Image 1 (cartoon, rainbow, N blue to C red):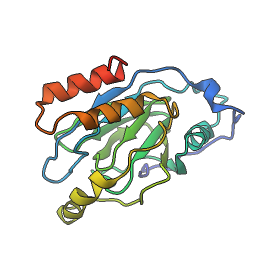
Image 2: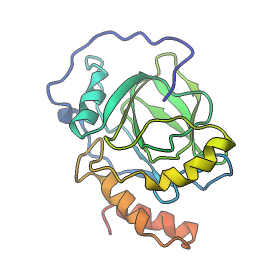
Image 3: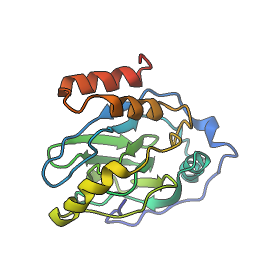
Image 4: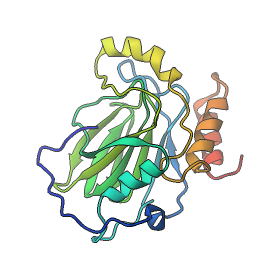
Length: 217
């Protein structure tokens, strides 16, 4: 969660009756990050990205993301940007829908990955995943939401990390993918990632997650 330096002006446009009509079927891109000593990230579940998952004609209101997430049980939505400093949430998962513009976002902390997010993209962050906006267009607008279980917090310090290492693994698996529902790719990707042995090498973890995302497990 966060904000842009410049205030975003929103022109009211058409709100579709059914946000599902704007969905595109997309395979998830999964990124798993290690604890870097400050940003713990999630010990099992990867960041999941759906590229261009939602069609956003100029006539469509950004509220389509709010409606879509709410229809799958992810609520308490907000509209804003992403904080320009590294932070994470230790007690809840988060979904970010890109409603307007583009943003260069670093996930996983300084040693993680920097991704360019564009309108129509969706990022699903398991608890503990570091995120920080490095650069964004003036019209960059994000819609965020959360599953019904968990408690919102913002963590940035070493003191936060001590408590986060205890709370992050306890955050429950969501009942639905915020984009594709109960049978969405997120459900399988996180379930399979959780089952990978703790001592597995990095290549095996990523290979297993990739196969799960493609429906081959």
